Length: 107
Image (cartoon, rainbow, N blue to C red; front, side):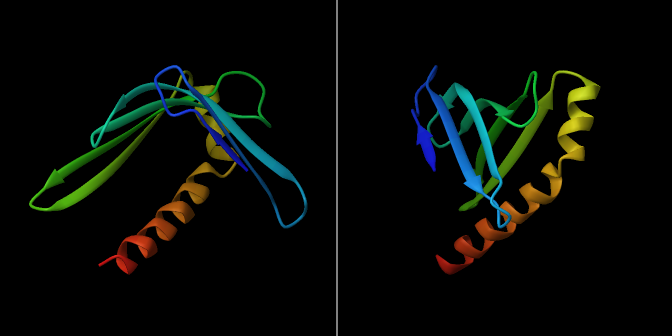
């Protein structure tokens, strides 16, 4: 399930159900939207109380190739450590692998 209001100040939320039936959900707010360049948004894991992270997705093009860079900033070391302990790195890598497959299929 996904709910997206793609505008500065707009909110987003997506949720999925794991194979074990557990719902995992995230939500946030769009802070900056520059078409073809950058998206900045907050990201809160609903299973973790407290603050989330600030994520910046940047697209740069050079010689007909686009590079996507993702920067995730935690407000504290404690938040960073909790996010990493929840498997964010593996989850993001899985998403990048799937995105790569889509990109290859479009060539």
